[in-house]
Length: 316
Image (cartoon, rainbow, N blue to C red; front, top):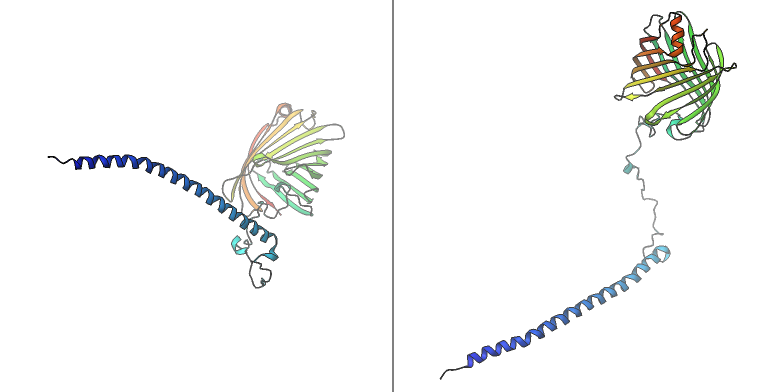
């Protein structure tokens, strides 16, 4: 006779597992939900506990006398608070000025200086390699401050045949940080003129100088001049320049026609021995235009001339 006990035991185990599996799933879900609520409750309690501590700390900072870390009774006399070493110490004596002025007082640095100062700048002192052995001196000297100054300018050419002087004296005031205007008198072409001048620094550091001259008879003259310092190295500087002259009326005696009369261009290569002193060599070209050229042709004079030159520039 066969025994059926093992078969019954196997069926009982399956029934037991089928009954325990739903119970285990329900228990796991309930346990997970309970843990989640417990974590939220713990975080809420931690936030409530930390908030009073933060408030208490702020109140202690607001009232140092009640703080446990009150340092009012400590002696700070022997403590060294010198932090200059963290900034690199004192600058060397020959350090460059932050505004690149090298100690010069100028209205182009963006700041205003009301104390009085003076300066003399020789822009050109040169000898031309022409048939007339011409010597040229051109410069500017001023005294005053950035808000107002007395300004003297000159442009003198001297050769074996004659001499040509352009001298002016005016009162200059700034229009803004980079532009100035000037009102004064000028002596040119053996007569006196009322001079109105605007000079300054254009974008990309092009220097521009424009002057309008009017005499007592109503004759007028306009002069525009611009130059640019192209720094090749720390000492070599290439300077192109251009100057244009125009007249309002025709004057046969002085061979001056109305309109644009002359155009002068130059190219000078400077070597800066110091920032104040720079010898140079260069080339200059002068061309007479329009009616002025016609008047010169009638007198048998040339309207185009190119000359080599050598000179020096310095200021003090």
